[in-house]
Image 1: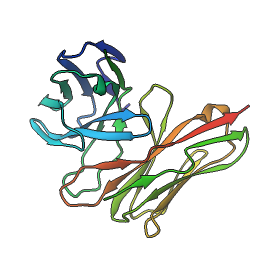
Image 2 (image 1 turned 60 degrees about the vertical axis):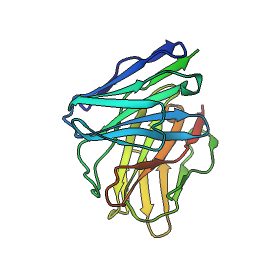
Image 3 (image 1 turned 135 degrees about the horizontal axis):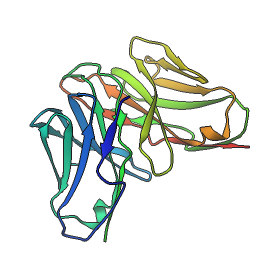
Length: 117
Length: 114
């Protein structure tokens, strides 16, 4: 069965802290994504990775960085957390879907609700 | 720029009713369209994926159709149940060279009343 896990369901951090959100998939998928979801704004893409050590910026990368040292793990890093980064963070993966390719189903993790105070 | 719209934003129906959720997109150059369900505070669960060459997909009481030329997809839910209460989102994968991006709608929040 397909599985995407995220390190925490709920997280509370202080302004200025460095925050790590981890995502692990056990399906040998090449492509992984980080989104944030806010009421009225829907899901917005922060970063995605199409291979180990390969990454590309999404629509809202400011204030975030990512790391993908192993195929199964994709980390989102908030360099200096701010209150406007309070949100639901969702990780997803797809098996393939190279540049211009159709790809397959996206599989999502359970989400991390991050509150920055 | 691709935009995905879901109308209505919220819907409340009595149990047993058949219902249709709508998803519209502005650029017909898509590779696929995926429907998801999201329960409050949870991640997204994939329901159906329709490739651009397909017209519809079915899974149990769910049927999704795709009309690329008119930029529309519908999710049909037969004999709705209270357990179907959730937010339903659609997402399209743009057929733009070099992009991995999926564009999401903001969802329809469905409540099925017992």
